[in-house]
Structure formats: C-alpha cells, structure tokens
Amino acid sequence: MDWLLSPPTPEAGSLLRREIGTYLARHADDRAAVPEAELTVSELIMNAVEHAGGPIWVSVDWHRTHPTITVHDLGPLFTPDLTPPRVTAERGRGMWLVSQLATDLAVAAKRGGGKRVSATLPVARSAEKSFDPPARITDPLPAAGEAGPDGFGREPFLRALVVELARAVEDDAGPQRAQDLVAHVGATVGGQMEAEYRAARQIVGRLSAEQLAECYVRLKAAIGGDFFVIEVSEERIVLGNRRCPFGDAVRFSPALCRMTSSVFGGIGARNRGTATVDLTERIAVGDPQCRVTIHLGPGPDAEGHRYQRPQTDQP
Image (tube, rainbow, N blue to C red):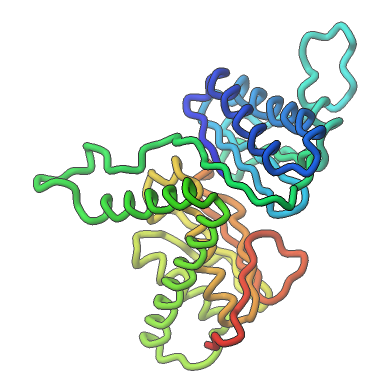
C-alpha cells in the first residue's frame, strides 16, 4: 500500500500515522504489539515531515510475516544517531527509538537525490482476511488542462478508467483482490504484447534473456515509456526507465507500478517457469528514473513480486 504526503504537514502526517495504525491493528495476530509498531511509523513519518522539505511517499509492504515500512523523500541524507539520548535531551530520540522497537532500520540514498528510510515493524500478520480501502489522496480523473478543443481525449479517459476500476475493486473486495486482478490483467495484456513481439521477430520457442529484454523495452516504448537495458544475463535483466507511460499522474498513484511488475513478470515466467520482479527505484516515489530487476528462474532469495507459469501455459 502506498501513500503520498504533499504538502507534508504535521497534520497530514498524524492522519496517515493513524490510518496505518488502524491497518496494522486490523491484520495483526497480536494487537498488543500494534502500539509499538504505530510509534515506529509515527517517528519515521514525522522525522521526514520535519526535515524533508518536500513531498513524502510512504509504502507498507506486508508480503512476509512482518510488514516493512519505507519512507521516501527528496531531503538531505543523514546517518541515524543510534546512541541512547540523555534523559534531559529534548531532541534526538526518534531514530534511536525506532532502532529499539523495529528491526532492519536502514537509510539509503536515492541515486537521483533524496533518501529512503525503511524498517521492519514489530507486528505479525493475522490469518484473518480483511481489507482496507486506502485514503483518496488524489483525483485520477482528467484535469481541466488536459482537455483539447473537442474535450477530453482517449488517453486521459482510459487512464482514469483504469485507476477508478482498480479503486472500486479495492473498496468492494480489498487491496489484495485488486492487486490479484491487476496482476491478472497485466499478465494477460503482457501475453498479447509478447505474441506481437514474437510475430514481428518470427521467434518460436523460449525467448532468450536478450530477447526478453528487447521485448520489455519494445512494449513499453509502444505505450509511451522510455525503458532501456542496463544489464542482461541468464539470471536477471535490469532495466532503467526515464519516462512513465502514465505520465506525471503516477507520482500520485504509486500502485500503478504493479502493472509493470505483472506484465514483465508474466512474460518472464512464461519463458522461464518463474520470474520475480523487483521495482528497485520508481518515478512514482520521487526517483528521477525507474530501475526494474527481473530475476529469471526460481531464485529463492530474490526480492519482489513472484510469478509462476501455469502448467498449461507454454511459450
């Protein structure tokens, strides 16, 4: 789940802290652990609000037993002071407190400027299914400035249609169901794009790593992206991207990145049995470019969204 704070006011940070706390409480198997997790969330968000001086993106990833919170901003890098503060000190407790309550605290520079701060929260997932419609941070509908002399064109209309359909599913059935459907749509569309690439290049059989990379770049270029190859090997493909097909709107709807993950992952899994897509850097969270790694094959230690080829689906 992703949120944007822009402008990053203390009031907006407090509201987001409560929203994430409610989400954690709803899914936790031990609610007694939630206050510590919520305090960690509060310290990370408020630290960014105080020092970032610009937009802040907050992501919570709960694919594993314990959730990970990541706070992206465009402010200066810092080294957290993890020494115990003096009893009389009025400041300097935040990062030390986070280091005591959470695990895996890390501060990393974003290559294009800014930083990301992440930590694993001290709460575990409950087996109970639930859903949490995210706050409506932005309006995906076409802006007045996008209208031409004859009204709104096809591109802003279809963009709004896709985003609103995904949101409607989240409200009705929860974010996991919405993600499942986006992944299904992305894999299906990706299959059609792969078929077009095969026909254009007259390829039969499994795509090589080089051909997969070319296919990814080709399909993204066709819809307005600007992807390029950084690295290709039999184990992984690393791509960069200078322009998102969704345009500036993606900065306000980071969940749209899942479409890239599912398209790439579906094609990779179809040709390698299993593929894992790691969205390492994203324009959607303030990075100047995207960086996407597609791990080909099982790769048990690979981070990201994993895709498996159905037994009946052969390239």
